[in-house]
Amino acid sequence: MVQHHNLYELSPMDTGWTICVMVLRINKKFLNPNAFELRFVLDDEWDTQIEATIRPRFSPFYFDRIEKNQWKTISTFLVRPNCEPIRTTPHEFRILFMDHTIITSSTSRATDLLNKFTPFDYIVDDVVGKHTLVDVIGALVNVGILTNTASNGKDIAGFKLPFMIMNKKYISSTSIFSFFPNISCSYILVVSKDTLECEAYGQIAVDLEKRFRAFRKNNVVIALAWWKVVRYYQGCNWFKIVIRAPISTIYPEPDVKEVEEIKMVVD
Image 1 (cartoon, rainbow, N blue to C red):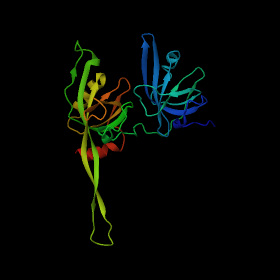
Image 2: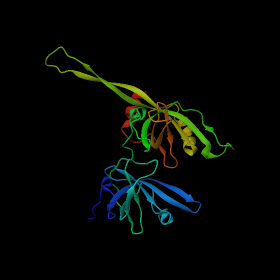
Image 3: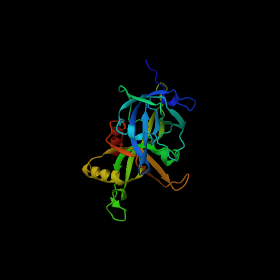
Image 4: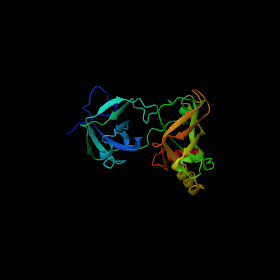
C-alpha cells in the first residue's frame, strides 16, 4: 500500500514525496503568446491546501489530463518556498512538477471545499496578511450599479460591480449573576451584524449582477473564494475585498452550515 504524505509535511529537503490531493482550482498563466504555466490549488483530506505549478515544457501535455474536483496521486516533485507576491494559500511552500513527476487517478476522499472562512473582524482589525488571499462568506446586500470602465464600453474585462456582504459578529459575553447559591451564573452571547465592502470585475461582476436580480426578494448567501484584501496602507480602516484574476470565484448558497446561521441573523 502506498503511503501518502500530508501536505503540511512537505519541505524542500526531498523530492521523494507522494501525496493524494483534490484539484480545487486550475488556471493558466501566459508567459508569452505561445507559452503558459498551469497553476493549481491542491487540497488533501486533512484540508491543507498548497499551490502547484506545471512549467511551460509540460503544460500542453497536462492541460486536458487534469480537471477540477479530480482526486490525484502525485509522486516525485520539487518543493520550493512560495515567493509569489500574493499567495493563494497560507502554505509557505509550493509544488513544482519535474521530468520524473508521476500523476495517477485516485479514489475520492472526504474533504470540505469551503471550510476556512476568514472572520470579518480579522479583516477589519487588519489581522489578515496582505499577501494571502482569503475566503469569506456572507449575505449579499447593497448591490451597486454594474458599470463598464473600458474605453469602448464593450470589453468584458471592464465591468465592475460594487456590493456588500453581511455576516454575524459575536461581540461579547454578558454574565447574569444568580442570587441563589446552588444556581450557577449563565452568559448571553451578544450577536450583531457586520459588513464588508467588495468589488467584482469582468465576467464575475456580470454573473453576480444577474444572480442578484434573480434572488432579489430573498437573502442569498455567497462564499467568496480566493479574494484579495486591499488597503490604502497598513492599519488603514478603509479597505475592500476584490477579485484576484483568474483565481477568484463565487459560490452562491454553498452547502455549508454557515449559510443558515447567517440567514437567521440577517432576517
